[in-house]
Each structure stands twice: as structure tokens, then as C-alpha cells.
Amino acid sequence: MTVIVEGKKYGALFQDCRAVSEVIGQVLMVAVVVLAFSSIAITVFSVGGAVNPPHVPRTDLQESVNFKDNTVQVFHSGGEAIDLKDIRIILSADGQHKEFDISDTKNVTVFDPAGNETYSDGVFMLGDCIVINPGNVNVTGGNATLYFIHTASSQVIKKAML
Image (cartoon, rainbow, N blue to C red):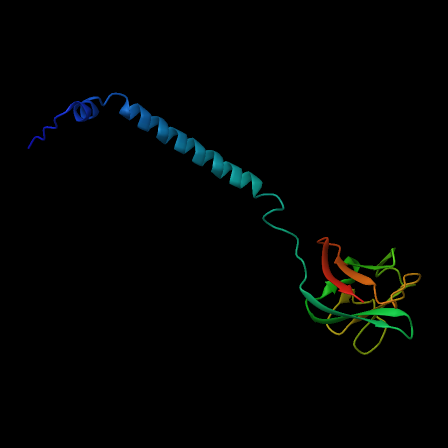
């Protein structure tokens, strides 16, 4: 069965089929090249740290100020344990900032749940308490800020107003 289409528009459309296969071939080649380069780009860029970010511990912390002793206490109240060497605490009040890490045994003390001073296990875990002597930072004025930082991942685990 033959269909006869009359008119200039339809006759020109169905009769002029030159270069159609070349255009389709070029479109397919462009598609193959784009897919090849995108798969190579995904492979190259996924090798870096973007796919495997550093682990940030999920830990619940409670902080308090002991006005009698002028100290700041940070309690581990749940979540993952953190290596003591990976902890940095920053106290900020009235334009004064002071950084503390666990190696500063003059101003920082770690206690286990029984109240014994402990650095031997090297881990800050459930029930442990870090006591900080803030020195010249006035934490009793009500406008002090505490930043508890995990240095291995460079992330702030807790920011608290004291």
C-alpha cells in the first residue's frame, strides 16, 4: 500500500533524506564521548577526601560552671568515646579567648566516673569529666562561650553559652 501525500510541504519533507544518517552518527559519537569523559571525571574526583570525609564523633556533652571554684566542667553524658589527644576546648568571654588541650595538665584535669584523676586510658568516654581552670577568662559573668573541638576532623562538637 502506497501513501501519496500531496502538497509542496509534505513532498519536500519525505523526499529529501540526505545527510540524516551522518547527523545521527555525530549525535551518537558526541553522546559516547560525553559519557566517557564523565565516567573518567567521576573516577578521578572521587579518589580524594570528598567521598571519604573524616569521622566526627557523635557525643552528648553537658557543661557547667562551678562558681565556688571558678572552674568549668564538661561531662560526657553519652555517645561515642573521643581520644583525649583529639580534644581542644576554647573559652571566650569579654573579648578574651583561651585555648586548652588535655596535655595542659596545669589547667585541665580529667576525672573518671569514680572521681579519680585519669589520663592513662587516653579516652574521654561516658561518665568522664573534664575540669578546666579558665585562668583570666571570666566565665562567671554569664556571657562566656565554650567551644569543644574535635581536632582530628576540625569540627566543633559542642558550642555552649555558660
